[in-house]
Length: 239
Image 1 (cartoon, helix red, strand yellow):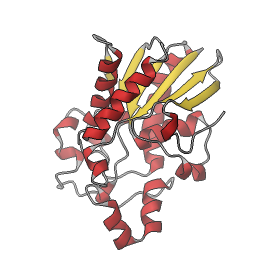
Image 2 (image 1 turned 135 degrees about the vertical axis):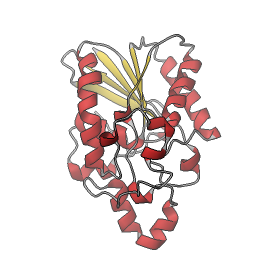
Image 3 (image 1 turned 45 degrees about the horizontal axis):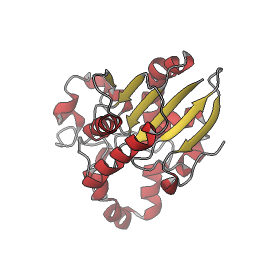
Image 4 (image 1 turned 30 degrees about the vertical axis):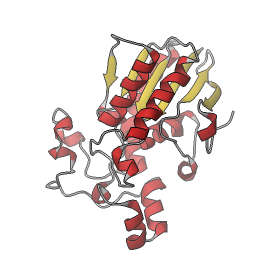
């Protein structure tokens, strides 16, 4: 038996401002910090020994994990950071307000960009300060691995190979794992775990700062799954 805990970072500064964030490295908003601490409290109640901790290169996910660990009184552990777990890149939409884009492009088109499987926004100009090439956080990532834009399909093709090699392989060996990541990188993981069809992905909501607790049997088949904060467990995947 093994356990996987997936936590979308707490509300970020740009979540609060309703902006497309993607690979821009923004921090947590005050509410996001509280959500992260509550996540830590809920996970702590499980009294589970966690063997590995994963996060992305982005500080909103890193700081969420740090707050969880502080709340759980866990120190001196090795955190594994992987750019492959970064949020989806929103291309030319990066930094723009979602409501303003709905007025400009129409609600259907914006929903298409946000939740469709294989539709990506226009590429972000490489000279734009929000392009990952111009963000210090990503200076060690090979340029060929840095996207200009991504669909959810692109995100899946980035996340899944890493998940399979580095995380699933450890779950198979009955390790317990905590992943602090992002809405779309977690959607990519869930697409595989729950065998979701391409057209089902738009229905999957990943609330901020609410741990998704997944229990596997000895054959790494999902036995049970639930959000730990039941008051914010919208669109729960039920088994």
